[in-house]
Image (spheres, rainbow, N blue to C red):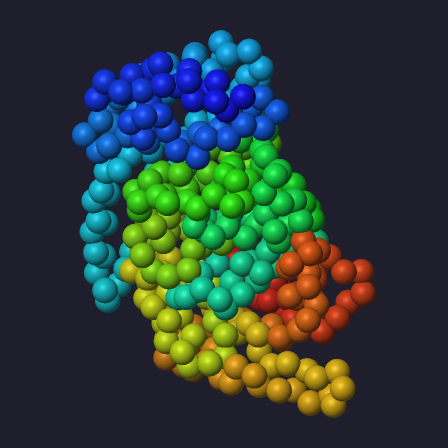
Length: 356
């Protein structure tokens, strides 16, 4: 069917006079039970052509036998203007009502780190499940376009696809009491997302603002699993979505703490309230000898607390059950038997709720 779709799309001419597929305007084309998903990308100087092209694509695809619907993300290669630097000595907090994106929840909580590989996504997911266990309406937005984790963590896999309502808003998927949205549900698992920065921002903002969180009524808490690092994407999302607060995840070694400092600096620059720091993979309890081994060292979170005067929210131990739960899509917070690891996540959840 995709061959037919490509043929139809090539009959629509780009501003350069070539078919949309031939001219590179079509990216990430997939088909799922008649639902056609694609990214319509235009060069910076052709941005005004996106709206009529999108309408033409929708009309052409709807006329194709076997097509039940379309889901089109539009983006350009334009370079976004850098946000003005707030005063370093007293950054002013952007009010949520002033944000450029729709308000998806009563509280939007970012989970950040200065680098990848510290277990940020696993921490964010288990924290979200812990919040949902308290009876809150909780969602999680996987904001890592290049390396989405939620399809695996949720157990739904990349084959799961969101439905659309009559206004073409995406209906979030559900697992473990959470509402979920991720680019990993929209593109094939083995497809590399080779997008420029502004394209990633546009796609991410559509995931954030075009998702029907809470059936349109919003959530109590939306946990945003921020991408690792401190680049333009992270800054723009923090500014335009008006994160109410954020936590920093680090591992115990100094190398991780140095990068976590950069994450703190990024959030400070956009006036986001930092609730505190979480030390993940903090000590391994050997089941044979009963000794706690500090495999990754110790004390990074405490050093970060002292350097930046932010709260220490707790330590999550390095355990096999966390890794197995993440890989199997059965998070440790779903286990019926309470463990020390669960207690650590619950302590983290209580600390966050007491601060928001």
